[in-house]
Length: 394
Length: 216
Image (cartoon, rainbow over the protein chains, first blue to last red):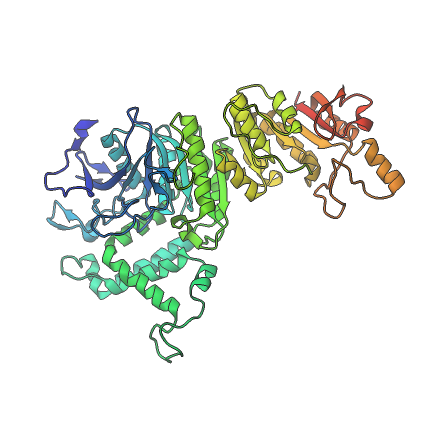
């Protein structure tokens, strides 16, 4: 497999920014060919001699490859640090954990903010529209590069769950266990609608400059912030918002009879919006939301979802959250039905939580115990060593 | 309904101890079979079959709390309703489909039986016998709905809506053209009595019955 890959360029920064560049072009689902695709990725733990202990984690829409531990540059905890680390549910003492920034992303992988080598300037809107399948195809090449033929487990939440399903459907012999969390086999009309609101907010910002903002040294901060604010509401639940903020006022005793952030919930959303623009690229947001909108595993299989899993040898565990209205339990249940129709090995749990879609990122003991049970059971069947008795959750 | 199941047996190598009635079911399943346990509870039987009989087992359970317990023990169990979700499984997908102490709580027992025998090459079905002498005496002399070791809930709380006697069950099998491969008369704890469930004494003297069924 070596000849297909270029060695990491000499100018690549030292860890933690690992990168891999494909030497041969990637043929996208749209038919467009993309050359010199780079993926930025992180690994945790050690690949065993038999190369059987690799766990691939697929990140969500605005996620990144920094899963665990503390990022040396930003000082931030990894987005799944509750779950990934030594002795944790995804135990880096036992597993070799890989997470790559998705194709089209803005954390070092090839995407609209990177330089188009053909034009010598950022891709902007000339970047081809990419799909979940394209993201997964690129990840498969990364695993070739890392010498991993078969994954012990592939998991992820939300858009990560879409990638997990794509992985299991497209590369069934390369996956032992698949755990799609808070996801769906296709993006619903409501979810496409929310994404469209976000995209329109970005494109309505004059600073977006028809997608060329990097060339004119601007950033569509207001549009991207509004997109994030709208999306953030969909990640929570009414109960969670009410518990957190109620109708409480922000740093004031009475209403101001104006349009300041009188309410705490307004102040919170504004904060979410404005901190987001510092870490995310507006065009990446357009491209990645589009990839999610286009995802429909049933339609790609003749309108019958079960066809996506015919004869699948993969062990599945689906997990949903009771208050998630963005990817409701019914979506996971539809996948379970399709898997039953092909007599697949499947577990399915709905976790009770009032924290909405975001619950998959939070410390939800019931969720963690379920995932732990499935991973340990699968590891035993796969012949991987058991979890040591000590550790935070033993 | 049946008493709460004990936790799944997890200690590797330890002498297995599961509920007697589940042990009766387990003893009927050859090693290496494909098994669907319908109404599997927290997965006690599945755990036993997986570990000690190398069975490729799946479970379906209505209670989400029990599903979580089973999945937490590494068992492939999904939450679902047997009366609506069995239709999703392909025909002949399993060697055995197990329905333990649940048939009498379904809305349409005949339709459920049809599904069990469509999905599995064999079905293993157990149920409390409403023809047992204690039940008969309770109604005849007490004048009230029976509360017995097998039927421990009062009438207003019982999930059992389609109770039957052993003879009723045999009649249903005949009506459906189902072949009874074996029938075991069991006492309230699940121990085998000294006679067959298909014999004359069973309908009066066994507290529960266990049948192995197939389509001829």
